[in-house]
Figure 1 (cartoon, rainbow, N blue to C red):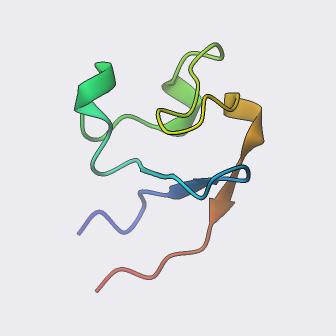
Figure 2: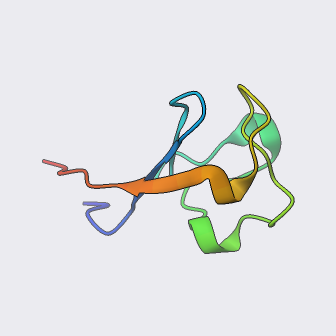
Figure 3: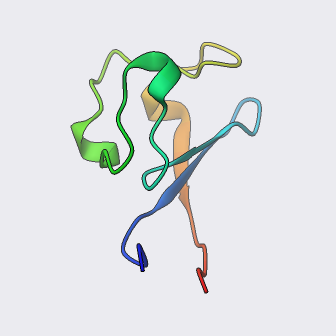
Length: 61
């Protein structure tokens, strides 16, 4: 169940983007892959660039 979705964390503030949940407040639907988010998207918490995020290993039950 959603085991192939990934989590990305902002290196500046620790905000986490979960592909399974998306970010509806910014118009990003649940299930939206990181690669499909526009390059000019920025962290909703601190404004850091998309390039300032790193993938985080997550195990889902």
